[in-house]
Length: 211
Image (tube, rainbow, N blue to C red; front, side, top):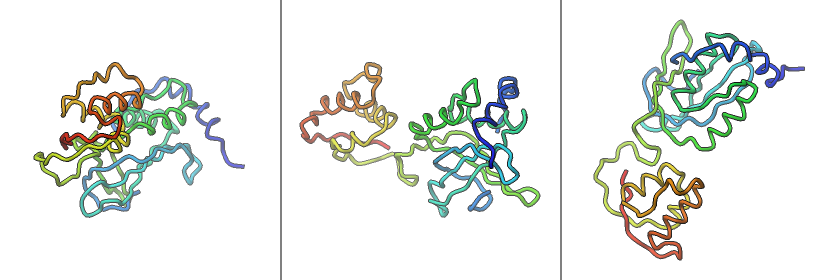
């Protein structure tokens, strides 16, 4: 019978609490890339050691759509430190109790919509993926687009399909008369934006979607 992830995370409590964050196999060549973090999974390595596996999808260039993975052990204080450092880079607030880590990751990934800068390096026959930080490029932007964008029509469907961050950008770029701080719920904020733009009854109004 295989090991239990929750039990192994529970066994990490002492090392987890005492370890500080540390700065932190690939199907793409050695190089630097902009990528989308698509998942973080806690499980076991082939050697049956607890680890975190982060999956990235290349966002642009020749290898757009290719995936690469970053493997981070969780078996000792050094490896825990590197994983905590990774969490801090992407903005994942790791819990005090490591047993709560899978739930914290699921909650975080549900809202995470940032692009990240990663590097793929090879050493001693092994390929390693490292995260360098969040990208300045937004996930709503096409990589090769310029700053000058023609005005285009915004529809109710466009707004209803947005996550909170691009919605906030739309409000700021178009000076929409809505205060996001008044709305904790993103759906309520969307309703207010639709109403302000006269789209709540599916009317059309032109505003610029700046990239």
